[in-house]
Amino acid sequence: MDSQILVALGLSLVGGLSTSAGALIVILNPAPNLKMLGILQGFAAGLMLSISFLDLAHNALNSIGFLKGNLWFFAGVIFFALVVNFIPEPQLTSEGNSRQKDDDGSGKDMMKKHRRQVLFSGIITAVGISLHNFPEGMAVFLGSLKGLRVGLNLALAIALHNIPEGVAVALPVYFATQSKWRAFKLASLSGLAEPLGVIIVAYLFPSSLDPEILEGLLGSVGGVMAFLTLHEMLPLAFDYAGQKQAVKAVFFGMAFMSARSVI
Image 1 (spheres, rainbow, N blue to C red):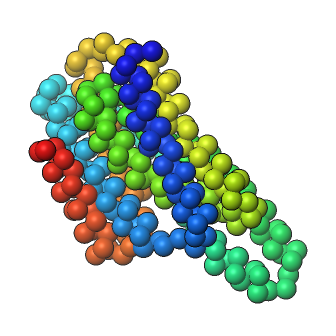
Image 2: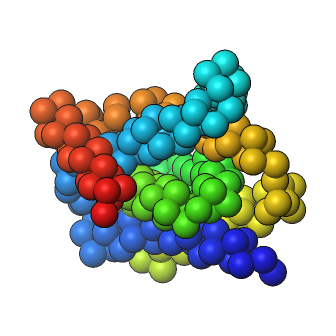
């Protein structure tokens, strides 16, 4: 197998299996600190915005021209907007509080019914996150074709984004089943769609792509990442951490990525 594919596969595994880290948070603490998750989302959003606009889109505009660069960028925006329209991003809910209320109440049948509903929501969340992770794996692969630095930066930002997604899967499953292993397993499996995306796109796009097409595709990746950040990551960061803390985290993430590019 080509070394570039192996590198992309390794990077996507790091990003995809970050959902396992989210599951571990739930296993160790069933009522996770949502404010900390919000700050983490804000930091990841800063990384993602910096990569999208100051790296991928910027390089596409310089390499293939303003008009073509913008067309590729907005093609990525529209593509992921359609994905989100048909598969909405699942929301994280504090099921730990619901469990305490149920334990204090007397309706065991209602509790069982509620747990079945929550388990179903956890499974649907896992499916939704898997489908969301697939294009993220494609993004990591295309970034790795450009260079290790681009692929590594994308994998880092996506990995941070995937930790709260692992929480979103594991929390309802753990609440419904009381099984740490099931919660961890389902959250981990939902992240494996990312390396699957690498494998599939590796066969669609050869490593010897025309440089202009590669830059255009990376511009589209920038559009995907920008939409993901503005549509999903920033609102979650604001909800969990509050506007002031989230904005600070975003700029800290951007500064961190700028410092990485200088070093």
